Length: 307
Image 1 (cartoon, rainbow, N blue to C red):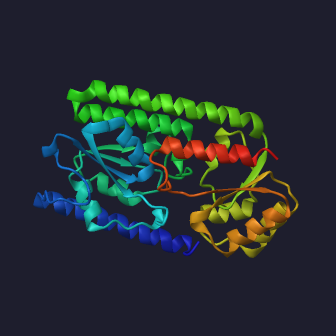
Image 2 (image 1 turned 90 degrees about the vertical axis):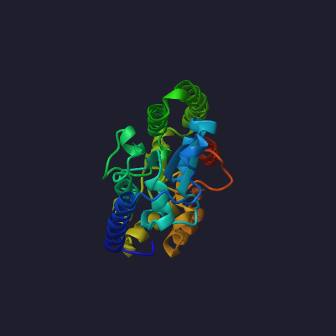
């Protein structure tokens, strides 16, 4: 991590205030200038803005040809927690018909900005019963994915009742794909259930839980990371010894937060014969849908768990 928890929280708070203020100002001016790749209602499609591409992909599948989706964060090179929206991002949100935020404190800037618009707002985390203080990486949860997809379809049907049946059909098609993914999760769970894992960050905790894995990350290290602060040297040492002893089956590494500590832990995992599963926080560009990405990750976990 490159910043302390205090610095990040101050930076995010400032960004949230600025974002919300800019949306209000644009609404007062009645601005309808084009921004980003968002479309206009004149085209007969719904303008949809998603804070992150994970939910943007779901929005596109359910909306089909009747929506134009703009995903503000769509690269693994972007640190979502510290993201500061541009004027183009805010302009896109100001004229959106539907806005999809992740919620649970992950994209507070987007949640604040969305509340100042007239758009139908879908909060993915809240749709699945998750709130501020919970692990915000909710797209890794099968239950939240399913709930969020339903909420997105409902928002489309409310905003564009003329195509309600089509949105329902496209939701069903998405649900069929999700059921196939959940079958793969159930199959992998037969191999992984009860095995211990540790993680450099709790990014994939929901997926690990769905797979039946037990989190054995040392408490001191896990707490520091959860607070977005640097782990104490003693906590890193304890984590390294856990891995060197082969006391867990898997080490999950978020490669978007690669640093000297994660490299040390990966080396320790190799010394202890612990399999490493690498992943990113944002959806990689080689995947066009959240379901495809999750399917690939499930396969990675299953393969690593064969040992």
